[in-house]
Image (cartoon, rainbow, N blue to C red; front, side):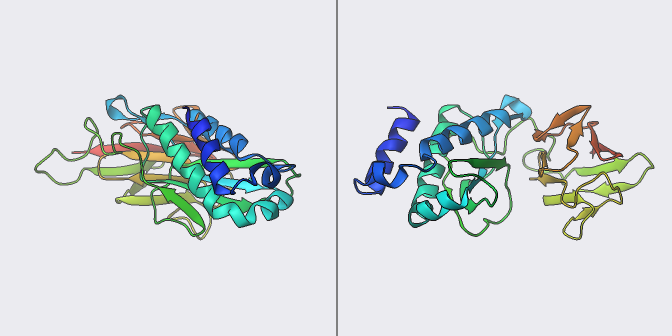
Length: 249
């Protein structure tokens, strides 16, 4: 039985036989799961060691009508979507950074039957309103072949960004948001940069750069990216600013 078939089976039990009635005339959850699977496929990033990192957080925006119709089932639906997406990712032998999280929100401006899926690599504390499914049994995000400290000794490598004018921005373990707004950890005075433009996630051994839906996009070595694991020497372009990724030690 496929992931989609198992998902449909669980949905039938979820709404206690009212499956057809509940979802008649509104967006169907199977369509949402299909879109989540496509988002995972579209946002793959190759890590050291040949592993494939995909997003683990999915925000589903539903039209106001669909959101109100599905509201009584939203929490349970998010749970089932997270579980099914974790199963799908596991079957592909892909890697996620943490648990699979699904959030269902009201998307004002969307017509009935329309929905939007936003996917990202999420490493911080779990946001409110979502549901997280434990990752399936496949390799965790930490992997050999990165540029972190050797096993059993040595200090943490010096990981930093260097601007074209020589300014240095050291990266600490955790998440660093780049942007020009107050919520950014690394603020850059560049009008081409969004308030929350991109995020760098450093686990001590690997840095993953994720575009946060910026207006002008994020480029690495001339290619527009959504999420990518950085390698020493990579050139990051945001707005008119160029930052070089450096690793010492």
